[in-house]
Image 1 (cartoon, helix red, strand yellow):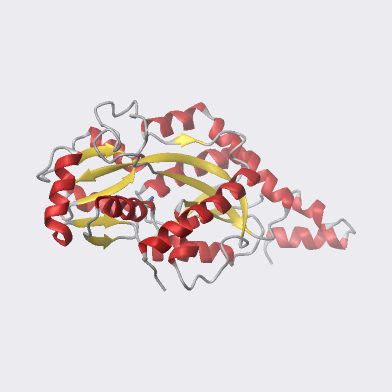
Image 2 (cartoon, helix red, strand yellow):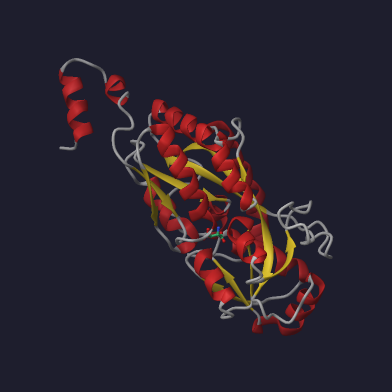
Length: 324
Ligand code: ASP
């Protein structure tokens, strides 16, 4: 029997309620499941946040990468875990697009999770291999239109932020390219720098370093305002794709049924972690905004999740891309 189970049993035997036994939470290592491979945007946000949350909780949070099917394998794994606060999920905008994209999800996204809080938000950047023969977004769009499916576009799987950004981009410019799915944007970046693929669109969390280091060509940021850390980079709107805007938000979830006291403890630890100046500095360098205290709450994440499911549903149905 595990120590916590033994303590709970002892507490019950002594006539102390389960609520008292729960006061010990957390008493062992917590696993934070990341739906994409190491070295990508979600992994980076997860590791920085986990480090600071561990301090706030006084218990270690370890990151586990469970990749595949655009992040839905990780979501399913956490949805079916024991609701005891020891298995959590960090996921981005893709959690809200999966219900429309995947015909056979084994869980109901709206009810399978106990939201803990929003974590971060980051814009995307449209980038290409370092020798791609285009220097501006206008030239890139012309090349893509002229070459169509000869252009390879790396993404982190159906429903990943990089996939959604590409879907919006190519439907806006009215062309199709060849998608190359990976298990995360860590390996997409490796292959882009290595000139194995032509282009991608990914969060600044993952792309700021390679753009600053000139390891890739950058064309635009998908925010409506330029970002301070990459002042030369135009917005997609300025560079010719009017109104094009997208950012990727992350949230942390526990399985539905997790006791309220545990959800509260985790949410408070998240708020403490995100308010740390050291975390904000690390996030700032990779153009990633930490959620405010009000947003790092179960209520704010729940509202965001439900409104994003409703926002993306018609967009995805119109694009007609589905997976089983
Ligand atoms: N955030 C990336 C994407 O959705 C995946 C990753 O973090 O590896 O494209």
